Image (cartoon, rainbow, N blue to C red; front, side):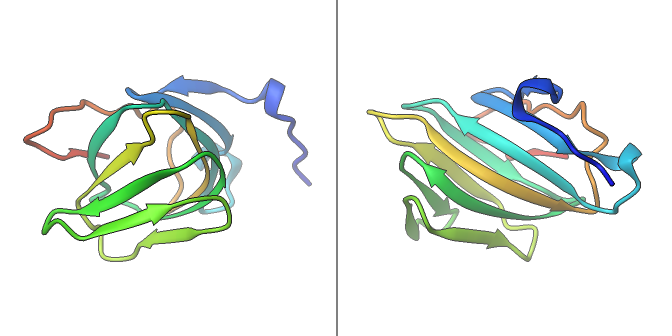
Length: 124
């Protein structure tokens, strides 16, 4: 059994926020669980080429924007899943941080960070 508390898990500054890595590859479970904060007013172009990801919003607000311009508002209680390795923009509200619980499959190593550029998707 694995028991972890927020204040004791590794925290990674992924570029536009913090990712607390609760479960990673070395735990041997096959998926990762993170508690991720996206800083207010930031916009990140992302694409997970090697992972599928699902994110459940627990705090704050923002949007997930598909590259074709389709906008999906994100508020507490909403989940979105990137089931096709979808390239997207993750945008946090100007007024508050966005906080997500994220699951990655397969598991993250745990030290990944993004290389953010508005014209190219950051991937890992």
